[in-house]
Length: 255
Ligand SMILES: Nc1ncnc2c1ncn2[C@@H]1O[C@H](COP(=O)(O)OP(=O)(O)OP(=O)(O)O)[C@@H](O)[C@H]1O
Ligand SMILES: [Mg+2]
Image (cartoon, rainbow, N blue to C red; front, side, top):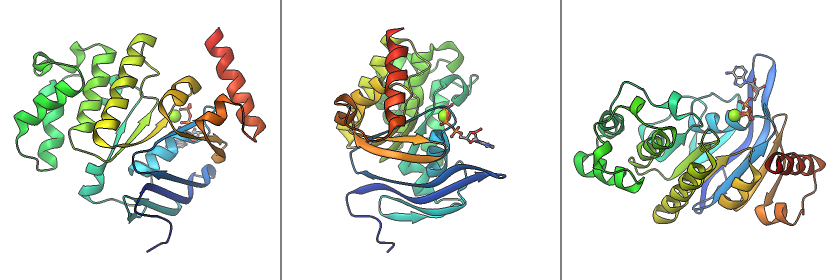
């Protein structure tokens, strides 16, 4: 036991450091996310938000620190199969994250086969239904889909493995506002239905306050502060940097 997690902690990151050559991209980052919680991460470009998600997902190594998921500790290196099923990541750009020349069927089938699931037809039908795309989409190619439809497939591909944690890196920022709202509602419904835990990066504080219970504010690889989202709305935060982000975000939305 590391003593850093309780039964109700889905994700615990302790003193994580990630460097790229000499550059310190994550500098002693610690985060605890409760099971079923939706936890937001905000911060200026280059502050280390994606690096944190990628290090948790096992897509980046970390130099030092501790990581525990669902009560199990993991090192920086390769994780076991159960980890890769339990923790799923959804990226900003569904054009980059889904192979364009594969059918939806193939995209959804592959993770099921890798993880040895049965009832494949039933699971694919259910997954398409859950993300609001009917059976008619099953044999379409991903290059034939709109951005919003692709992101639904990316989410279906993550959910089909019955994960516990979704790492969402700007999942809707490449989409139109109306599509963005639909995708956020879909994610929120999935979280409720499955008691999922979310860690969501967004530059949009409106999205964060709609979707998350707490938010960590990052700057230069460090977490400046972690506050409940109500604190953002009431402007109860301690760091000047958070204030600047808020002003920048409001300016952006008004413009
Ligand atoms: N594989 C890599 N090799 C070298 N440097 C990297 C690598 N990945 C990230 N970095 C650097 O680490 C820093 C943090 O990058 P990161 O992608 O985590 O920022 P971010 O907060 O997600 O920014 P954005 O909001 O623009 O997505 C940046 O300076 C980036 O250039
Ligand atoms: Mg990023």
